[in-house]
Amino acid sequence: MPKPKVAFYWCASCGGCEEAVLDLAEDILTVVEAVDIVLWPVALDFKRSDIETMADGSIAVSFINGAVRTSEQDEMVKLLRKKSQIVVAFGSCAHLGGIPALMNLSSRQQMFETIYDQVPSVNNPEGTHPQTSYSIKEGDLTLPEIHEAVRALDQVIDVDYYLPGCAPPPNLIIETLTAILEGKLPEKGAVLSPEKSLCDTCPRKDSKPDKIKISELKRISMTNIPEDKCFLAEGVICLGPATRSGCGERCINANMPCRGCFGPTKAVEDQGAKFLSGFSSLFDSEDEKEIEAFAESVIDPAGLFYMFSLASSLKAKFHDSE
Ligand code: SF4
Ligand code: SF4
Image (cartoon, rainbow, N blue to C red; front, side, top):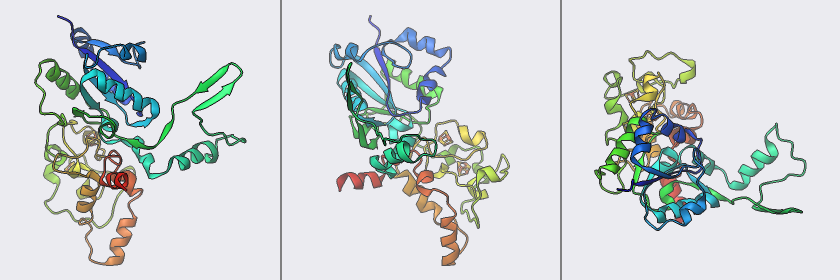
């Protein structure tokens, strides 16, 4: 019997999701044994034309990581959608837009001006910005177009499942592959990780009081938090209350607060707004000026509360419908 065909593809991402596949260690041999990999640009020399000549629906599953920003990424994910029975958004950037989507706080023009004109180390006297085509005597050179906004994968194509995390942990990858191979997947649209919040599974949860009251915020780099104490109760911002569990509490176990890479649970539509609404009740003061000073002590609130979910936030949805 022919082995199921599997594709891996990366869009706007750091490469960490590709590393996560390699982190399967010896389990990767089991994967290679069980499936026929037809596309994996980071590791194998398949071409786009190899995929184009395949029959529609002939790939059992495509794992696509990274957000979508360029015309090439847009074309490739649409091609893989056509050729695949199942598409899995692999990792935070495909799932929610991820860190690349923080660029949506600026326009494309502002991004070009910062990178190509203003960064102190830039030497660009002619003010050259990226162009989609340029002619030289040898012929025309082309580059993909950079779109105005960074989008999560399901803002471009229909997605069947979401494998969360920056990057998804090896056990979840193996569980997903096993479920696909055994035909035991949950209903379409599911996020393949438990529905509990991270606080429910956190090893520090017993030190988290029912009502937290803090009088000042602390930065993790400038304070020492005992390894059994809830970060939030100690005044360090931790997105655990608004984040889905399943990562194995990786950051918490390394004595770092959660930054929300697993995204929200099903009950929450906007992870950043959910955290913000709880966060605003934490400060132990009724004085308007003190509350204002407390709010201002949050450095880069948009980057902090929406570190992974800006593209799929309510703000992005309102913006799209404008
Ligand atoms: S707020 Fe953070 S440290 Fe506290 S219980 Fe939740 S996940 Fe754990
Ligand atoms: S603790 Fe939070 S940020 Fe860290 S891996 Fe888990 S979900 Fe992601």
